[in-house]
Image 1: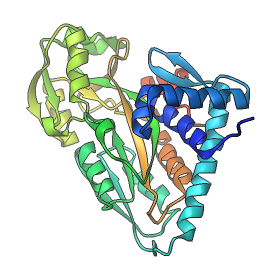
Image 2 (image 1 turned 90 degrees about the vertical axis):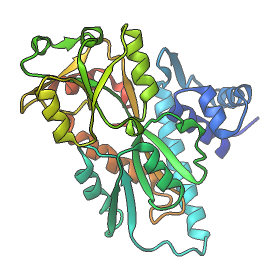
Image 3 (image 1 turned 90 degrees about the horizontal axis):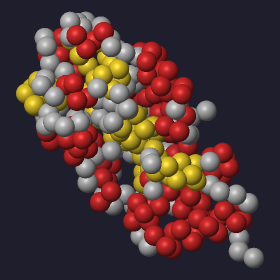
Image 4 (image 1 turned 120 degrees about the vertical axis):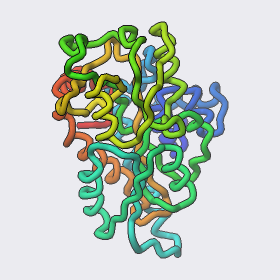
Length: 316
């Protein structure tokens, strides 16, 4: 009778992170049928289905979440064992790379519990953060999904999805739509949009696609990566997509989009040759704690969060 192997645990973990057997197979260098066969083997051994197939991809079942928790612990412990057998001296500063996020200070504070000497590198684009991660310039990274991400070679890196976050919309408080609890994306077709510079928009393809689905091409009038400038432009009459934990105030309101058409995956990555090698689970816990700290900035997002645990299955 077959037994569970590390490759089976990696398969389950990767399917959960990718939300797709096809993408997970590509990442693992397997064919889709081969990975599906591994998944069926694991399900026979544990006695139940590990994933439900939904329109949003593969979502872990209750049994799947329990198996995932154990798989992550085993794989992290194995990585720690391998790290401890190497002669490479990994003492020294812990470099954390991150895109601009509302919970960055809390993340750094939490990481100091893993390494007293934490040094931060903030960059405007997720692709640039991953460049630094691959080059070993940072040991831990937090970034959003970006076009071309699946083509990256992330060998030697533990990658976990933190959350799947819906985009909200920022409107001037004087806008007639500001009185609505939710806004139809199509109603913004004639507005001037504020976005980051195009090279810093990670999911540019997805952004244009959801607007096309709503029947328009967004008029990208203003480009800035500086949050206070973007908020000022919105207060002056423009609109923009907004991170879900964004706060209403200073002349703007944050509203949910009807149907939540734009969703973004946020990832935590840890190099296996870093000062926190084998502690990816603890790194994830730090990122999760930091993310929780900003949930109540947007009460509407907090309500959505509580109603959609599938968007953050690893949170407890």
